Length: 275
Image (cartoon, rainbow, N blue to C red; front, side, top):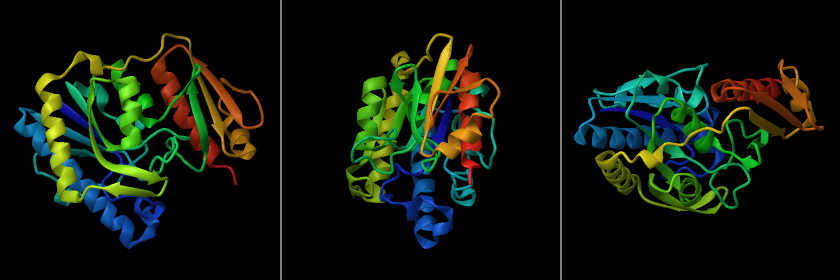
């Protein structure tokens, strides 16, 4: 059994504000990346104990160089650095039986969710596929679904858990904190969070339910990105094949989900280049 891990930071126990997620923030970020690394270790060790022959971890937050490789379980392989073609799920196409999404957070606009956003919080207001608003969990899970990889377990706050339950009710969720506002929570201690994560991984890998597979929509696939500022939409609309809908919204339509998934990343990076 080969297990894939996509690891973010906002859903890690104890992480509640921008200082924890920002590599330039100093000591608080350094604490957060250590906490992130140990939650990855807890999941990986549980996966190996459950019979995994390989665990590959993709560092999926910000600069993608957060996980402390020197502190990882020596059996783990790490995907680190950027850019990566499939971004938060890069490598998912290499033949895996299950995926774990660790440290994830709710989609943008979720009330009281810890650090809710989608990919680039200063750029994205909302992301839609068709009529449905999307977040990192759903978009990444659909990319995994293209390759037949079920997302059998996730960890994060209670708002992330509610989002996962809407999309994939059979997916195990380790709730490690309960949001009080966007930057405050009641949280488990790191040690207890790791036990909670390991237990959820064990349960998930014991059954590997097919119901945890999230299929993308049938083509044509329509993505709409509403940006925070009109200048960001100005830049994003330079992407060939895109269509400007209004001052802050750009649409992209494709015949293949992975094309649209990668176009989404391109739109956001173009938008982030706006002054």
